[in-house]
Amino acid sequence: MKLENIQSQMRKGILEYCIMAIISKEEIYASDIISNLKEAKLLIVEGTLYPLLTRLKNAGFLTYNWKESVQGPPRKYYTITEEGKKFLAELDKTWGDLSFSVKQLTSL
Image (tube, rainbow, N blue to C red; front, side):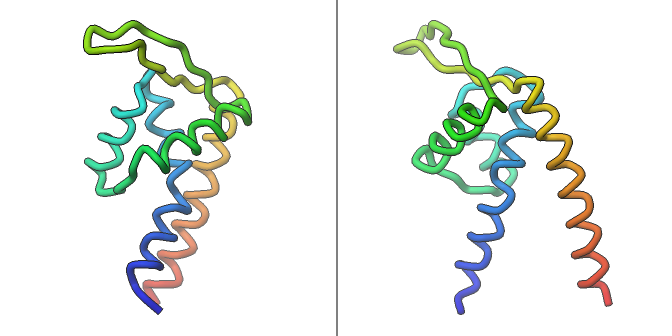
């Protein structure tokens, strides 16, 4: 069993939560989401991000609008919906519960 595989699976498990948290703070462009994740040491590529954003949008948790860019074609900016805020609140609770349980078990 390789440690890198386990680490990758752990990161993938919290990626949607982190993406929702980032978008909940402000309207944001996809490459800025990637920058935020990389700054937090959660490495992600566009090929992983865009399917997640599409899935979250299709679930009604995100919406987007197009804005003109001075650096090229129009850009898609994402915002969280009211339904997304409720979903994020549930993810916050789940993360808190899970984090507490893991800390309790690993500090024995």
